[in-house]
Length: 454
Image 1 (cartoon, rainbow, N blue to C red):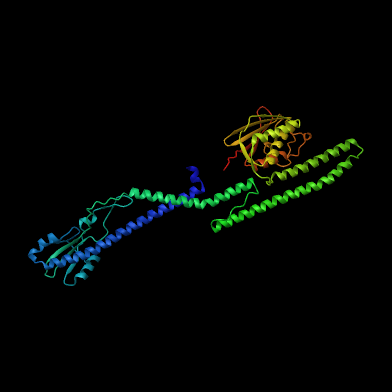
Image 2 (tube, rainbow, N blue to C red):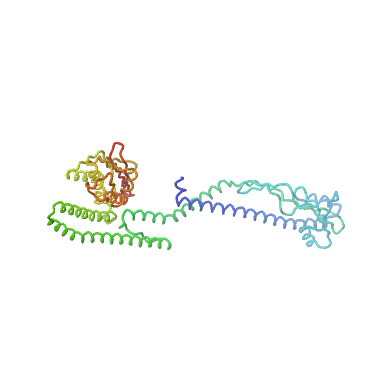
């Protein structure tokens, strides 16, 4: 769950979900406030009509029968009663009193009572989606002295409407649950649709690192996505062209250098001083080796070789058999028992460089192979003096040699580990160096397992 919300999809999903829920809550609050306002306005208009009808009808009833009529005609909320006490009135009538006076005409005298009826301040329980809440009635709630045309003085009391006697309970929990589920589902779909192109670009970048000749992205989707895909394809083409041109340039330089170097070797054979001749031939051989390994370094970043599934144990067996036939002391323990997706020639070069490095500086190569956690680990240990801890990282630099621990007479140009690391990284793997506690240097090559269909 933590990984999901830490991803781009999870963040977009959470942002959309919270945005929609907050918007829905605010909208519901505004809707309920507007609903309450409309109810109050409708009640005020109804109270105005009912008060006019009640006053007019009461006046038509004989004075002796008015009390009985009012007992039968009064309803909760709108009542016209006989005055039993004198209450102070407001010098300025309320808006409701003034509007009712206009409707009744000048023959009726209306005055607003200063004191509000007690029912006006009683809290009302209102059910909503957010649960029952207490609120006060904000509509018309007041007492009005009404003097009829025949001079009788009555009191009109406009109070809040009584609560509904009809049981009406809505299961808002189910409504909210369905709302949240539907919104979460839609938010997840939108998040997936939004982040899918980004995942495709990320996967394309990963595939580009493994195979520069990987097929380009399809130009589909929204215009912005098509533009990004087109820019990515153009970048891939430029990188591929750059690598090809660099490799071709280095190959041409190497080829062109071979001829003068060969002529120099032939001419050096004619030098009379044997000691001087041997030194010059040795330097010339070192130059030729450096040129060849420089080309190998350039080719180690070239990914023109096709990726294919291969058996790691078979590849190791082939490499170690070739090393043994060449007189090298190589011992292998364990087996991986897994398939890899890689370039056979490049991986062979990587393993050969690691074995040659162990043979050159430690006379023997001990290989330990094991598999676990979706990856194969190949440990190559030698019997050499090891490397100072401060220089373990620097040995991967091109042409770097540890003079204090690696003898120049042992050969090498300082490119073997650099080439091996380039090849390992192209296959999604890694190479690490450590001085073994029992002596010697141990190189650990980690390569991910290949799963068909993924």
